[in-house]
Image 1 (cartoon, rainbow, N blue to C red):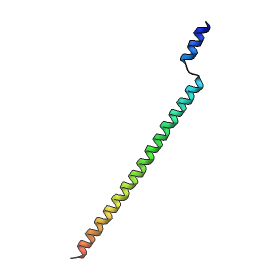
Image 2: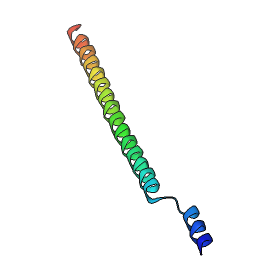
Image 3: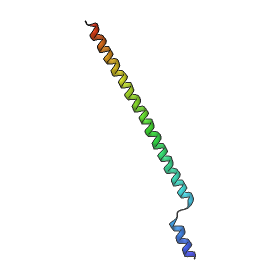
Image 4: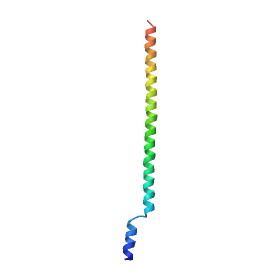
Amino acid sequence: MNDLQRSVKSQNPPIKARLSAQTGQKLTIYLLGVLIVTVMIVWFGFLGWGLIAILQWLLDCIKNFWMSY
């Protein structure tokens, strides 16, 4: 009977160790999600900034074209 209990204990890790590992995995996934969302926000900000700069440049070119005539 004692050998049976020992083999069962060796197969299943302690509950605290499993909960700690699950908490670490959840925290890692959460932090990766936050990082991805932050990078997407910054990326779209740069795209928007670039689009506005291109539109301003085009408007300046059009304005200079019409002023030359």
